[in-house]
Image 1 (cartoon, rainbow, N blue to C red):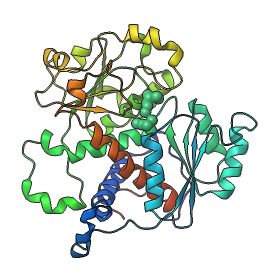
Image 2: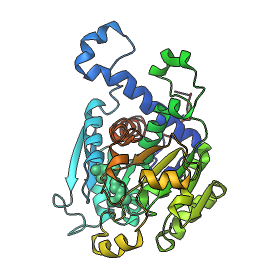
Image 3: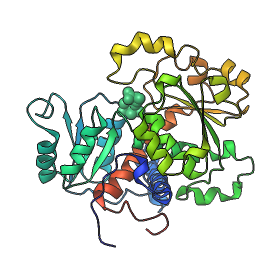
Image 4: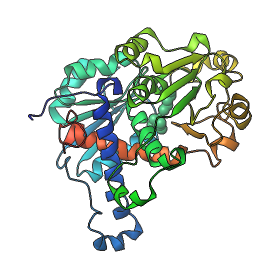
Length: 353
Ligand code: CP
Ligand code: NVA
């Protein structure tokens, strides 16, 4: 199959097998290379399955075009590029001409003449679309006003890794195969309580196609915009999504409860209005008990987190998967960099590597 230029703006751009393949690839990268990087790597010579990933970014530079803050996404990108043998070039909003003296079109043309991939965190989604339109190298969306695709790849990896806590009959004898084979996940009920923003939008176009149901509670004025809902319908995801106003109704029978900030980057001026609108939407034990969540429910949050959207008991408690989820930003971004920027093989389905 000859390589073809692809961009990734949202997981809506990928088929379900392509999404599965990225998550499986991330799992294999993590389990083969993470132990190699720890002090336990003294042992590595004894286990031939442990190794550095293929050096698909050797002599390549990935431009990190970030006009907004980032902890996880930036660190994941920089450390991933290094492990794949390449370099990440951080270009913050005060470093380059974009947005002040230069257009996204001209910027894309120039960067793509010198770098082999663009990982872009911008404001309006149209900006990253514009970069992709004029770039000669793949562009990966690192978060825009509408979508956050790499976050949901990390969430999926985290859920698969914790499959045993949802699958009461998980076969323990499969443990030895798990080093490279992603544990299977049964269909889950996933509740989202909070603002309909970029993180939720990628959940809406992804989870239903992988067999999971979504129950969403957002105040009516903060629901997904038409352009997102059009993609949801186009992908046939609509029938597995239920929208409600009441957070308790959303968490009913939920295996997983997810939230995000109520005030996304760029919405700081709306803070007071949003705090009023989301009153009662905090994720906590009382909400989930009264709403009838599955007794074994788990919690996800993309971070950064404020206590008003989830209390400390849940956030730091045994249900919380937020820190494994944060670490998984690295392995999933590495998988995306490897397949999108390194090998140009994003379109090859799972199992055909
Ligand atoms: N979840 C996430 O995207 O975090 P950062 O904004 O810190 O990159
Ligand atoms: N919705 C949040 C996600 C942060 C990772 C934002 O856009 O700020």
